[in-house]
Structures are given as C-alpha cells and as structure tokens.
Image (tube, rainbow over all chains, first blue to last red; front, side, top):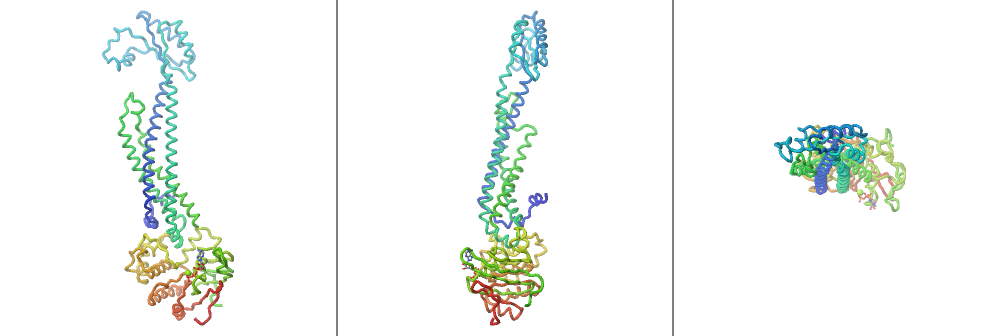
Length: 297
Length: 233
Ligand SMILES: Nc1ncnc2c1ncn2[C@@H]1O[C@H](COP(=O)(O)OP(=O)(O)OP(=O)(O)O)[C@@H](O)[C@H]1O
Ligand SMILES: [Mg+2]
C-alpha cells in the first residue's frame, strides 16, 4: 500500500535522479496512446456484439407465431382450436391470441396508424412461447394442418440462432483483442524500459555508489513509465471515444454498425483504460527494472 | 600496535585479486580501526584503485575475505550493500556524477537517495560547497567543470553524509597546492571527529603536510603486496 501511495504521490527529487529519457519516453507515450485507441474500438465491438447477442437470444426464446387465415365466421373457432392444440403440445410454455390493438400496433410501421383494420380480412396472430426444452415444430405443423386448416406456424426467428452464435464469438474476439493489445503494450513498454535502463547504467552505478537501494532506483524508472503510459492512454482513449461518437447513432431498428457505440453505464468502461494501461506499464517496467538491476550488480 | 583497539572499520584478511590474468594483489592483510588516518601509495598501475574498490565492495576479492564494519562483503545482498555504502564516503579517481543534475544536487545525492530531508541540510550543503570553493558553480552541470572542480565536488559528495569512513582515490590529483591543503583540511577535520580516512595518492608532499597535523600511517603497494612504509616519508 505504501508503495502505491509513494508511486502516485511521488518524490520529485527521486524522479530527477533519472535523466530525461528521450526516445523511450516518446515510444511509451505513442505505444500506450495507440493501444488505448485500439482498445476503445475493441471494447465498443465487444459491447455492441454482446448487446446484439443478448437481444437476439431474447427474441429467440420468445417467439414463434401462428397465423390463422380463415373466413370471418370461422375465425374465432379456428383460433380456439389452435389454442387447444397448443395447450396440448409439449414444449410450449404458453400461447395467446393477440388482441386487435396489438395487431394494429404491429402493422402501424408499415401501413400507418389510420388503417381501418376492421374492414380488412386480417389474419389472427397467436404468439407461442416455448419453454426451455422447445417443441417439435414438424409435429405441431402436422397437427395444425389436420385440425386447424387456416393455421400456419411461423418460427422465423429460429434462423437467427447461428447469428446469435456469431455475435457471441464476435464479442469473444473483441475481448481477446483487448488482451492481445494489453500484451503488446506490455511488451513494447518493457522494451522501452529496458532500453532506458541500459542507456542509464552509469547513472545506476553512481546511484549505487552513494547508497541508493534497488527499490529506489527501480521506482524512479517505474514512476516515469507509468505516468507516461497513463498520459498516452488518456489521449488515446479521448481520440478513440471521439471516433466512436462520430459514428452514426443507434436507432431502434439499428443494425450492427449503427449500434457500435457505448450506451448508458458502458461509457464508464473506457474510463478504465488509462488506469489499466498504467498498471500494465507499472508491472512491465517493474519487472524490467528488477531484472536489469540484478544483472548490473 | 596503535589503532588495534575496538572494532575494525575495514579489514582485509589474506586478500588476493586478479582481473583475470595473473594476480594483481596478493595476500593483503590490513585493518583500519575507527578514527585512523591512512595514506595508500604505490606506482601507477600497482593496484591502489583496485584496493579501494575491494574496500567498498565494487570488486569482490578472488581469495581471502574483506570485511566492512565487521561484515563479510560477500555475504551482503544488494540492499545491505546500499546501507553499507551510506556509511562510506567514496571519492572515485574518475569522479562519476549524474551529468543531468546541477553540481549542488550531485553533492546532495547521498542525502536524496537515503530519503533525508534536503530542506534541513541546506545550510550544510551551502557551507560544504563554499569550503570546497564551488559556491559559484553550484548550478553548473558536472560536464562543465574542470578536473579540479570535479574532484572537489566528488569530495564534497563523499563527506556530506558525515560517513564513518572516507575512501578517497587521488582526491587532490588535479588541484593546486592551496586547494589540496583545503581539501586535506576537510578530511583532517572529519578524522578529528572520529571518522576513518584512507587516501590513495602519489602526492608525497601532501602526505608530509598531513603527517605534521595528524597521526597518519602510510601504506605502500609494491610487488603485489601491501607494506607499511618506513619513516623516510
Ligand atoms: N577492469 C579492469 N580489467 C582489467 N584490468 C584492469 C581493470 N582495471 C584495472 N586494471 C589493471 O589493473 C592494474 C591496476 O589498476 P589500478 O587502477 O588499481 O592501479 P592504480 O594503482 O590505481 O593506478 P593509478 O595510480 O594510475 O591510478 C592496472 O594494470 C590496470 O591496467
Ligand atoms: Mg588509480
């Protein structure tokens, strides 16, 4: 704990014992900035595909519909018959005939709200909700054909199942990308820190001569790289978020691309990137410093 | 033998050292007791600098044992070595500094790395800089200093922690006679405060000047061995 406070609050005098380290500083800033920028997009991708998978999966669970087209005088009887069949079908959790108002709402996007439904030969829709085991669609179709001639089973949402799987893998790929980005950043910062330590071996020698402990020397380097990684990552996140904000905003029917933003609390995720980047830099530089100091003794 | 009482500050026991070829130093045994004042002489290349490096642990003896403050150097881990260095003031022959920091910060470096409050030591620092004649060079960077100025800064850095022992390698090699007397004075003052001093030097006049003020012993490296020099000095 003390070490962390010490790291954050710092010791201006201690930092100065390490000379400014030109190109490694710029390399660290650039690497962490670029990585943070990429992480924002990988994160956006993961979250968006996660949302998509969730939404589609929910629709899947919910829905099949039975459409009943029959002459007006048989409509009520056929609907009743269909509901009876459904009640006896294993795997169906519940079934319900939609009300006229619900049907109108479904059609409104296509025909406008002023449609005189009662004057049109409208099919009756029955919503079927399956339970976790699911029903046998083929068997249900055969029974309906025999008992409710006007009924058609429409389980259109089933075709989305592979899409849900695809969205889930996309989300997984997004997270893997973030891990890889973190690893690449750690590698680059390790190299930068090693270069800085090697370039400063004379400084390290002088510090040891006057009684500096390894921890003190290491911390001076670690603090630098950590602060730089934090700054670089902050800039990268800001730029990445600006890029995400410039994407067209998600609409209700939004396809995947327009939904590629952050929504609600997920805006907080990118805020975590700079501290995590700093943590990666801290661990990478710490390990590099310990290794180098051991070798230089 | 005088100076044999009490614990030894630095003690070598049958120490040998070789850089890889033949032995440069053989069978060195010496004991620096607290408050003693020693000079170390010998021809160029005889191993004076090597001897000092053995004393402060930059080199490890290839045979025998070096003890500082009663502890075997070889047994120290790096942290313990750092703590031991804080009790030693070291003047390198080639005075190494942190070139990006001003002279004043370099002189104060031992305080900085040991976490001392620099604010409290400011008066000491100013006084010390003025004693070695570097007050007006305090803000210069080490690469801008002359050879003599570097040596003065190195000596100031070595003594600022008021160490138990000062090991100085040719501390007066590049300064004029008056300045060398001033630097010697500083070391003699420290010695009078009970600090142990070891100076490697070619400068026989300096040794003579010191001998008139303190009880100093003169060690000489010749033929790979350490001898107590005679009274001819
Ligand atoms: N790192 C090293 N590797 C190999 N040989 C070395 C090394 N350092 C010193 N030597 C050799 O060891 C011998 C003693 O060197 P040292 O610096 O101890 O002598 P010195 O007595 O201090 O000389 P001077 O009076 O010139 O400073 C020299 O011959 C030198 O060339
Ligand atoms: Mg020498």
